Length: 117
Length: 112
Image (cartoon, rainbow over the protein chains, first blue to last red):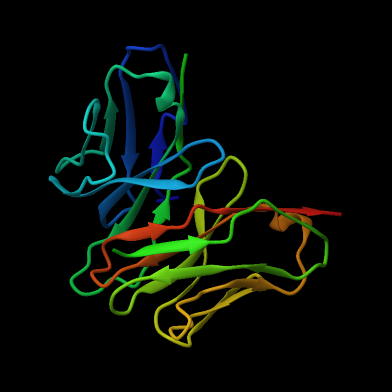
């Protein structure tokens, strides 16, 4: 199955540690999106990346959070010095490259659930 | 900017009841519209989509019609089942096609 793969599915960290979440997009997809879902809340956009480029990071907190999508390998969402408020489900989604308007959809992974103790 | 507003939940219905979840949007140009569904413990899955005005998306008994005059894309199902219990998200993809905007989600619980 060549779906969007996220790992780890579950991650527990203590306050002050670092969390790294990985996302491998579907085969042939070069656009990656990260969303955060807090308990009882909706889906919040964080960042949109293409290979080696951050296209839109308007939803990313200015501190402690960073994302990359290297030429080779998965996209990584990195949270430094985690705090309890970072506990959430983080979803990655991918879409194919678009030469013209993309009327397609996003393909989501099953999410990485971060718990900060 | 582009945005989506959907009906707040939670919604609780009895099996075989009629479902409507309202969704309105704000966008410049001609967005594509989507409904996604999230079952407990899983990621979002596309339920249906419509790419231009008056298009009707349908899947698994769910329908939604792209209404440009009312900027709406309401989700409907004639007879819900317990297995439809999930969170439903309305979304749009703007003119560039590279940015997706999601509503806050509506939780649906169907009781036998």
